[in-house]
Length: 69
Image (cartoon, rainbow, N blue to C red; front, side):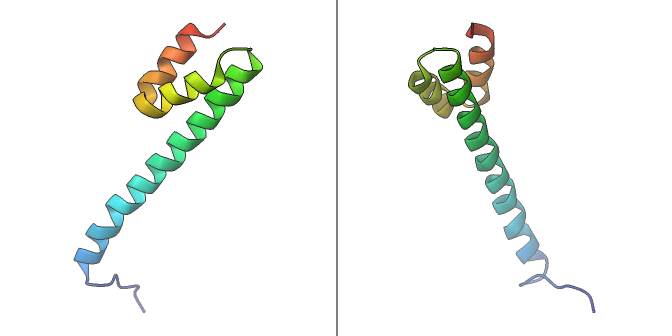
């Protein structure tokens, strides 16, 4: 028997953005954790870099990679 989505195609259209948003937030969280740990290991101000990456996202991570020691 085939798997059916609730409400047919409308159910599928609901779940795709939810899955994309969940993946985005998981990647952002992992990126923030990595920047915080790396900045702390390099004796940089880890809290400031965490906030920068939280606010600016990937742009903040690119800036961190350019600026880090």
